[in-house]
Image (cartoon, rainbow, N blue to C red):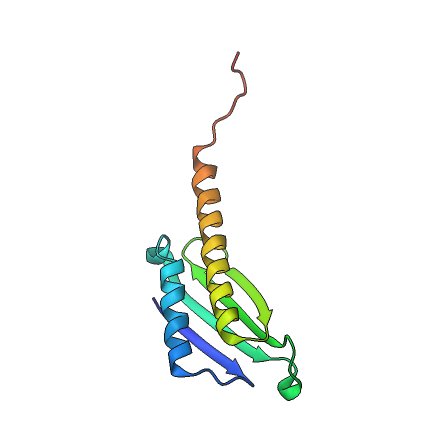
Length: 112
């Protein structure tokens, strides 16, 4: 899985980068063959002021699907990474279920 990480105003230690990649791969195991690439963007909105200012946006490009975009904010990077990976997995699962169910719907027209 191709994962690109970009940062603006945030230092991301190598152990956090490795944890992020591992957690994203785990969260997307059920759709992994269909995932073409993942882009992760980190930004610090307030700089050194503190507060809930660290933002993470994950964009997963899945074959034959619109891009999957999840964004979240937190003051702690580890918490943010954990939550965003969990949400990416949930959104991917929901979208996969929807696409499967579209093909299996049957019409009740004319049935008595």
